Amino acid sequence: MTAIIDYGVGNLFSLCSSFSFIGEDAVITNDVSVIRKSDRLVLPGVGAFKDAADKLRESGMAEVVRAEAASGKPLLGICLGMQLLFDKSFEYGEHEGLGLISGNVVSIAPVIGSGLKIPQIGWNALHFPKDRPKHPVFKYVAENEHVYFVHSYYAADCESSVIATTEYGAELTAAAASCNVCGTQFHPEKSGKTGLNILRAFCEM
Amino acid sequence: MITKRIIPCLDVRDGRVVKGVNFLGLSDVSSPVSLARFYSDNGADELVFYDITASAEGRALFTDILKEVASTIFIPLTVGGGINTVADFDRVLKCGADKVSVNSGAIRNPRLIEEAAKKYGDQCVVLSVDIKRVDDRFRVFAKGGREDTKMDALEWIKCGLAMGAGELVINSIDTDGVKNGFDLEMLEAVCKISDVPVIASGGAGNMEHFTKLFKALPGVDAGLAASIFHFGEVSIPELKQKLYDDGINVRL
Image: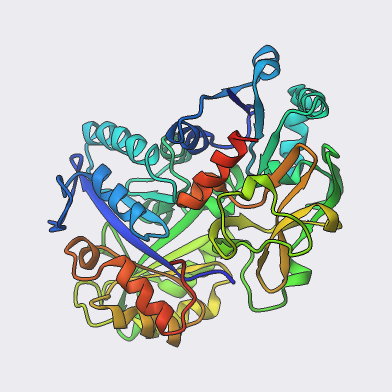
């Protein structure tokens, strides 16, 4: 069973539907006993980093997620949920994340150059670093398959954890991982067959 | 690099897709659910759903259909039609919409854009504008293109962007239904003032029109159409292959 962490952020309808489509039992929950019993966790999130980080802490879910991740349970952060896995974000100030992957979340504006729109909204291609084996979450995904992004910030200073990149004026982190913790900047639940294959692979981790 | 998007638009009335469709291999062509699935499985990058039923009964029916569509397609879904309040945003987002398109409701109350953008993020608010030339100026029309608001379209778009609209759908009333190509002049004027994605609508009649659109205006991010896709005059996989062959970056 997959527990989708409910901490009052975002619309979880599509995420839940995606798991049921691939035949995986998923529940949206903030019940600690359900989360402990689950086989894996998904940390979703949309909106502003500070607001989400505050809600995660105030709901007590930050500690639960940290403890579960430390136990070795697979954890997938999606979009803002991925950014929350990092040490810090510099979105409107400086805010602490969960510190499960080392690195910082910064604006794409200074690196992408002029002429590109912010946020990046739309389908972009995935590239896998050539110097490391492909992460298990991408086992059903080939180089250049497209996924759906909506973001203005990205994870930087995390080179050793990058498991996929995308090109938007610069090479941006599309996904990162550290041990049993991984995260995607894009939305697998909105990325057609490719996205469903990523969720399927995560459920096999 | 980010791809150009192709977006079919479904007008839903009384639970059925308006405008006849004649696909082969689809058992129920007027069912929004089977049509949405068909597009999602056949290369559409996103779907737009318009609720064109006014009655409260129709609203409940639409909500049911929206939920059913959202639970079976895994591409972004934009919903519009009759969005007048933040509560309307809430209603369709809870049914699985990813973005919400505002038009007449935002003209009546421009603060709607700001309130919704603050609550759900800019990326969630799509400003749809119906534009027609009047006395050589671009004028905003409301109520499905029936009412001249006398507002200057470019000024209205600037206002919407300042309030947090995250995407623009530009419908040219002048080219809509004519099938002679997109309104490049109008779209160029909009691209000049927009720092958010621009979705072109109105006038697509064949595949070449999409190539022309993306070649002439690199600032346009997506092409939207309804009848040419519904009637099978243009198939999305063929269109995307042609765009790819013409050197335009698309998701195949």
